Length: 93
Image (tube, rainbow, N blue to C red; front, side, top):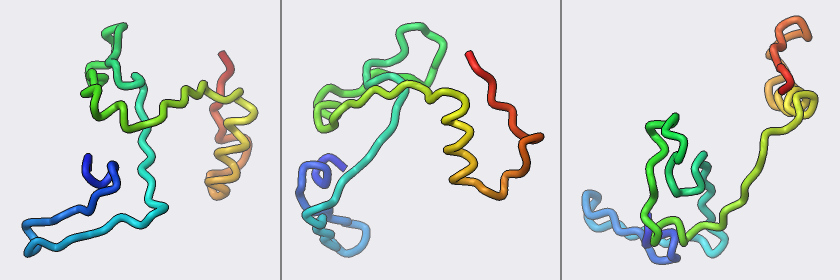
């Protein structure tokens, strides 16, 4: 992925050396809980420190959790078949 993220073509050796060239507007989006530096609290065993050269290829945007009423509206918009108000368990704080 490093070559592709850097704008270089992807060569798939297992497929006869197939070359895939990224579109000029190709982008990669990733999410993570540790901003690449691992979990300092020790609570998330999967939060490992990322290689600095890899992390440096991304822009980091920290986003907090939405307020419960906003989260509820997001979910209702994305999953309208979820059900009535009686099924919601969105808690504040």
